[in-house]
Length: 240
Figure 1: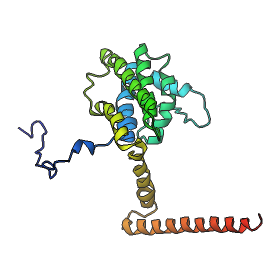
Figure 2: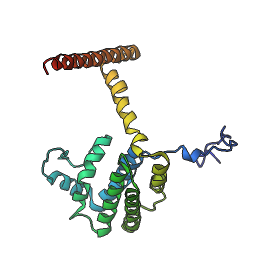
Figure 3: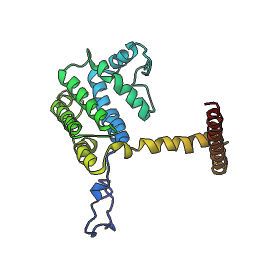
Figure 4: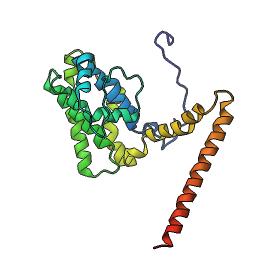
């Protein structure tokens, strides 16, 4: 029966009988995988594409003028295969603009505006009570308007774990502080610098040794560059 339904056995965890252990407090909010790649990319963006059509939606992104600091998606966004956290942020800057004039119902704009407000507010490096109130208002606005996607046939239900996780963000901020310290985007960048770039510099054979040597060389270059900067500043102070 378990094989039919894809169920896996759950063994008694070591923390089950510990008096002060609450495993649910260990599951911290993650801006990258829950907001950028989760709610926005895997759900809201797909709902909007189904609702407006890929061709028209891509045309809106293509028609946007080039502006300094903003990425121009000249081919649209439906053909992009691999997304990074920076790509998600660039799309979010102009996503609401792409909805205007294409969205068939005002609630689509309201849901998008509220969700983007929630994403932006959740990324603050510090919070005060009024910001958390605004965060809750943005979440309430999204929940009020999101039913339009079910009525229009874009999605069957909202029993989605990542949507459920949004209601715990304020509690998590009050308990653990700002979420930038819990964001896995930092470790993702370290993975790029310490693993992907190092592997690319190798010949793909016995790459572990080559990656280690490449990282040692990079570290030596950084230290020497820092030393030259320090030496330059020291010599420059003699003329002050």
